[in-house]
Image (cartoon, rainbow, N blue to C red; front, top):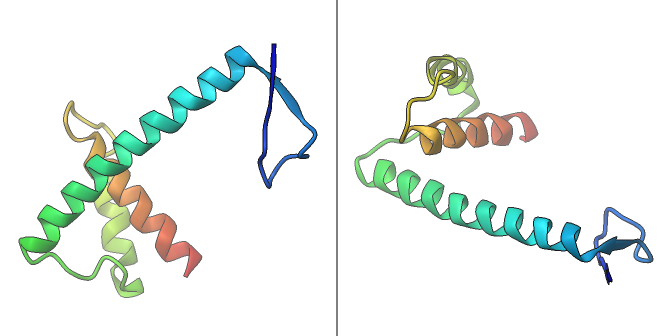
Length: 93
């Protein structure tokens, strides 16, 4: 069985099999769940008074924090992901 995929990055006529669509659905759900955890952690940090994540002058300090989180311990995956998101956002700006 094939499921039609409607994705702006792919040809609208592209078809994928059901197993692949189910894999994509599980990946999407994992990303949504992880993003919720990221948002909760960022909210906690903002409430604690942490500021400046979007200030380009803090870029190098954030890179250093990311390097320190390179060997992520269990439970720190969200912190590492948030640092990666911050660097990604700063590079886009």
